[in-house]
Length: 259
Image: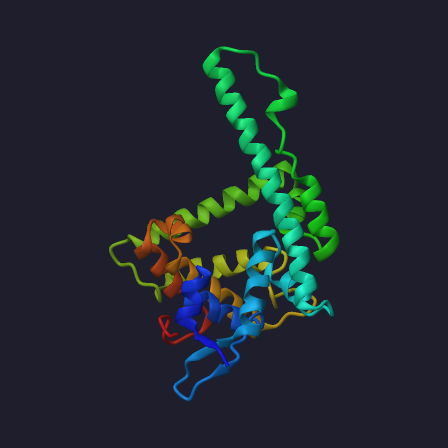
């Protein structure tokens, strides 16, 4: 039986080992077996499951919605065929979009007249989103849209303020992820995570599960420190590591760097 270690799978899939451990913690992609040494190994079935998770993430679904999809009765091959249909449609849309932008560039260079009917071909992705919603449930965009302009601005400004406060705390002379200032920020950060719909086991939810929420928050904290896209929000790798360690301490993990 072919199987791959967590490091091999992470490399092939373009994700981190921490991401795979998080997917295991929330029940999305458990390893096919765990060796006596504690190493995780994945077989072909696990690879298919991970591919489906990554495809659904790319289509905008949150982890709770993905879990619901994976629990369905549809066979993997049929489900992947549905994924392929959507990916093909998205590929075609992006091809039209590139052609539209190319026409705009050529028109501007030649001093011609811009035509709206051709400028925006491929920019309407509502049909794609509608199909995703119909087949696999609402995406996070539905919640974001429901906030309205004022709500979105308030949310964005609040997040920007939180990130700025994290950067200031991480660069302070007495920076300590376990100190009072960092722990107050950690509490704010966890409250913010719990406020976003779809957070598994979030406090105040109808089916609040502290352990599930802690695993979810821990997985995100790991991503902050390992994914450069997240680290930029906190001033770079050092700031992101500070945020991770503070959150881990707040969540009750004795060793923030534990695997």
